[in-house]
Length: 175
Image 1 (cartoon, rainbow, N blue to C red):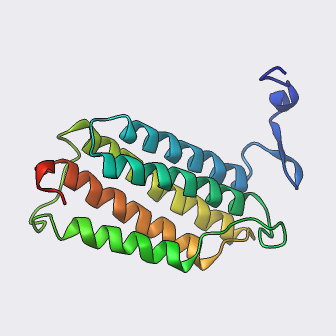
Image 2 (image 1 turned 180 degrees about the vertical axis):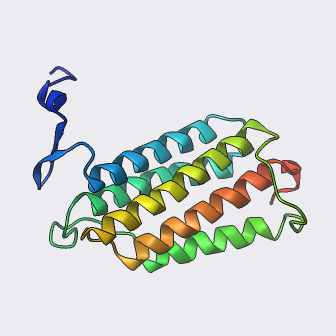
């Protein structure tokens, strides 16, 4: 089987179950940005980071696939797909609080720099914020987006922010 089909050469793509849609359709903008976010998480995972965080980020990449499935169709419940839940949001909040309590208070504006893992987390955070904006546009144009998806994305960008800060602290202090 070939990777290319030539079906997208006209500026459209296949979107299950919707059929053919323009590549710049708001849903495709959401899914493309989501894909980019997953790639940046892979870059963070490829750095020298604690195994605990590498494993958790892998779990988050898997959850991005759930999110993608949910955002790819109008009625994910009807299709029997997994969905982002309030429990997923609460779990992220616990991780944010767990990491944040180990960090010094923020006293100035922070520039993205330091360890590569930290900088890549901040890049992932900025892509996540863009994804939030794309999701908002998609919803404003009639797309189905659950409140849990919006909340989870907002928390996930916060998680990436505190994780990036953590990677610039003394990682031996973790646990």
